[in-house]
Length: 172
Image (cartoon, rainbow, N blue to C red; front, side, top):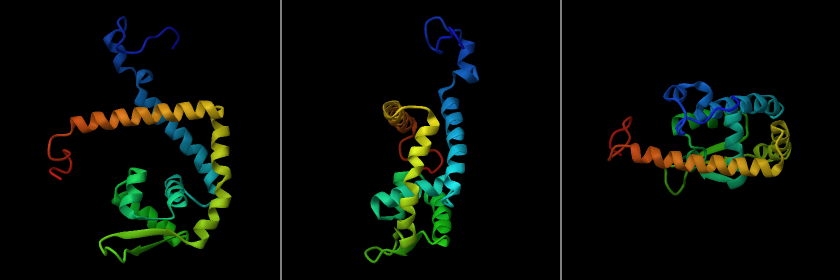
């Protein structure tokens, strides 16, 4: 919208705060959905969904991790992560085993097939970057800004949580 100012500036009417085209969350949501559409096409050749691809990225980087640590890297809870791991295990890409050091912990590691898939996945980031129409520096700057936004929003959410736990879970 040409000439529009962002809600909150001195000359912006209060009604503009409630316009969909003024919501940064919606812009990020729309971009995320667009990314998912591109990833869906690219990852089809690998037999992976986007969430499965994210799991594989972490495992290619770290080799073996407890499910809890894997969830921390991906910002996913075990209820969301467990079905992903089950499907990856059924596909022969990962193996889950109880930790010998702590039987409460489950370790996830790549199989030979999972390791081998990495070579085929090397083209994915290049194809995604090409799809954005951005150059490498633009991608780097955008990612840094989004990381800053995530950090700020995490801090705001932490401040908004009542003492002793989140409203959904109660005291931790």
